Image (cartoon, rainbow, N blue to C red; front, top):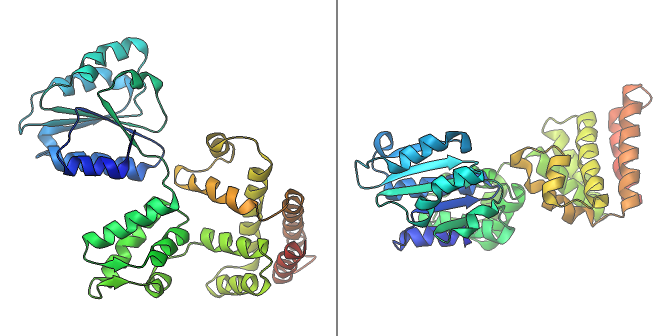
Length: 322
């Protein structure tokens, strides 16, 4: 299996294949993979490019693969393509000996073992990237735009975006536009320019709480309140975050199972890895106490037994005292 950076390098070096399988849950990388193939092979989208769904489009996919190319190479894309045995037999000749002038790109979120018996299929890893890989991508994007960036600044972007590549791409583009006349991007540029979502801020707050950093935790709350968040909404955010930490801490499920059980959106899959790391800052019983405490605080606010600001302050300090 090729890592994505190696796939990009192979295209740059002119080492092409007739069949590519982009495998993994990160739509950013698989989308970039298809775009890279289009840049290399497709001269006119209307004439030499076609995209389809899965096995239900098998006839149309085969027809596209056999179609005449107007400008030398035709690119056919199939998404979530997991063919049954009979359908796979129909594609086997192409997988074994791709037609000249035709490139087939398969974009699958999940592994499909049946494809492994065809050595001609080049599989590209489009799974979630680790922090170091994302930081390297940021540095490469900056270099392409004539900018340098400090290692620490690149890792700050990764942290602020919680390793979500879609957010990383958006914020990196914004930074590049902001810094194009400066020649470099510094940590202060990142701190001032990159949008830190409430999700990231709550993550950092929980980190401060887990490390018993009282002043930093209270400062984080003050900053969020100053930007329009309400105490009751913050209690809800913190409760949701700690509930996920508890779920991850006590579960024996793997990442894929947790993704389903937590009912996360595709763009939130990165939260599982981040939650596993942060949950280790707390004892399991303390996570349970925190969840119960925050639920009780929300109930008392709604019953008018305590004001939201007092409930927020008390809950955060009590969790850090455990």
